[in-house]
Length: 536
Image 1 (cartoon, one colour):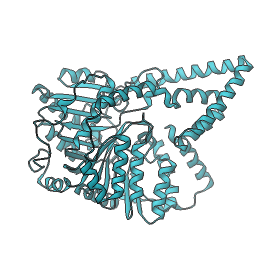
Image 2: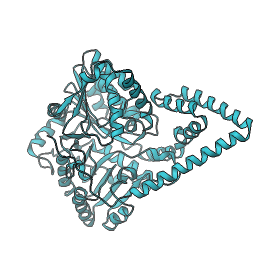
Image 3: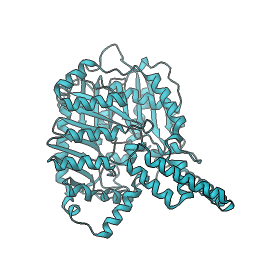
Image 4: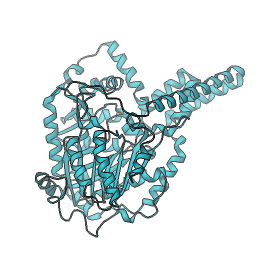
């Protein structure tokens, strides 16, 4: 199905503020570089010191325990343009520059410590069921501190419109609290309907919290959004507000999408709260997105994720107990048959899912552990028959590329689906620059012809799947705060597989086209694009 691309309608947003901040930061960078160059010309000793410092930084950068694809662009930039490159790296390339932010998150995590505990019986049962999956779950628990659960009903939504419909119905039944955290919010039709529900629930005495990312929403809403929400009784905060000063942390955005209702029901997936995600508008053809609904023990992890980010902006929670276990009953006990936002068919599916394993997890750019990427690579390593991915952007590390290629070479059916209509043309060109290496190793590449595919999911061997917010690109894997759900032997896994079976027929396969020998000019162009990819 092809749809006519439409331009976004004018909305009251903060684009002007974005332009002002970008120009302000650019002028500051230029001023610093000009002063540094003047100093180098003023004194030979300063010039020699700059050269020595450049060499030291390059050596230390080369020895850093980080992805080689990140190191090389900085090394080349510093060696080619010592003053500019060194200045840019010292301002934007050092993890140490976010030390104060990391310490703040560590204090918040310490205050949340003890709220998430791994049930040993569940861990042992998974070990007896599937050792590879148990190893994956153990990694997530050991390095991200999110346990794996059973007793959780899962419903998969193959369209964002289905997910948001169920979400509205569940929100209408909230009794105690509502937590919503989204990368992007557009105050138009789709969010307008949610806003009416949130305002009504706030008037009923339900605690309503709304959290959004400043950069993610800057094209949709203005700075008065928080005041308008507060006027409706909705507590509202913005993550990492854009400021017209040099600030390394501005590069780290909140890309998570989480809704928690009374600690019993949770939603997550790829969709934000903007009209294009639900095909109300069509700026890039048909928008394809997916999500999941959780009800049961695993919602506890989503609650902790939200509380971490909410208090990162302003630490106001001192007692977290009101947000865990409402009404003295386990939320999964009644099953889904009588739950709001769930059809009888979904209830039957989820009833089977409750015996499976569910592990929501979050990824932070501040801890040096690329959990999102490692979970994906773990799924690829464990695959014996097939592994399928959808991603809006394909800008991956050498390690991820090697795992995908090795899986294909050992006979696993590896497929990656990317958009047919891009939202960012430069990033689309960079995405295509990764096709040749993968296709030549036997990885099959598909492009979604109806429009823009924004879903972030994978499925393997009919037993394991992940659904969440994590793209196969550097920003998601290394720079953003993200979240996902690891699913094992749930009926929802089969639903994810069925979604892929519906996707493939409306795609064009480009594997053969990119597996052919590329011209020297084409190879050079791809190398340049891949070189700048980590900096995009």
